[in-house]
Length: 153
Image (cartoon, rainbow, N blue to C red; front, side):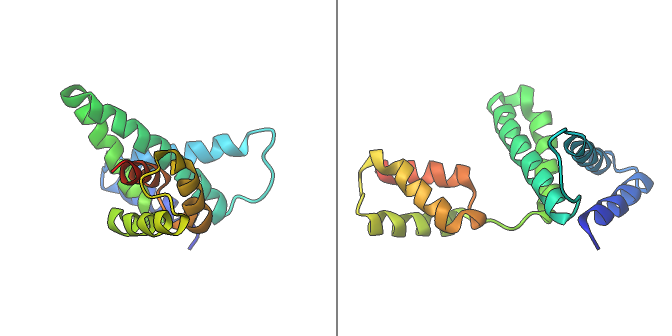
């Protein structure tokens, strides 16, 4: 079953269950897909790869927004919770990324191999090397934060 078919089935189930948060996020993805297809430079197939790209882009934007809302404290709590649900729900279609512990181990190994222990100026090189070799398995934001943290200590 394609991602498009899965989303359609999920939307139908959400509407029957009166599950507004799930219904809304699926409709938003459908809107994002329609917008991308209508761009003048669009060419190609609307396949699972296209849906994955749209979902990944949307999740990245919503996760960043969620973090900003969390920074607002009490005022942004409701919106942060809504966005956290969306990110978690859509994550079922995205490839799984390595967790913090596994990422930290890869970073430590890369820092040792590159011989840049304690050199904060090497953060970009370390991050670039990791993303080049393991990019599909890593969360770029997490890598960036951990590399800077590990090189500064």
